Length: 73
Image 1: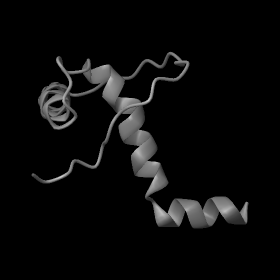
Image 2 (image 1 turned 120 degrees about the vertical axis):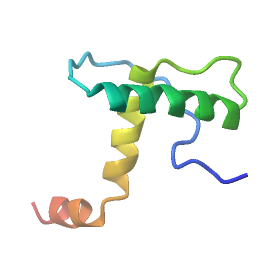
Image 3 (image 1 turned 180 degrees about the vertical axis):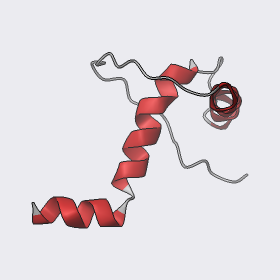
Image 4 (image 1 turned 180 degrees about the horizontal axis):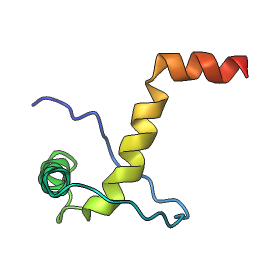
């Protein structure tokens, strides 16, 4: 099976953030949650809002240009 970019999600103290998403993106997040649950042997999918933070974190961690510019500042 192909590995998802997003692995198991570690619970941390949350910070509340309000954002607007398109309906299509919300449907994609819901589908991703289902696939993620199956890939990580979870009984139920996580709510889509629990995926956004780890996805953004993963994106930023793998953005080489961001890391390079961050080190410079």
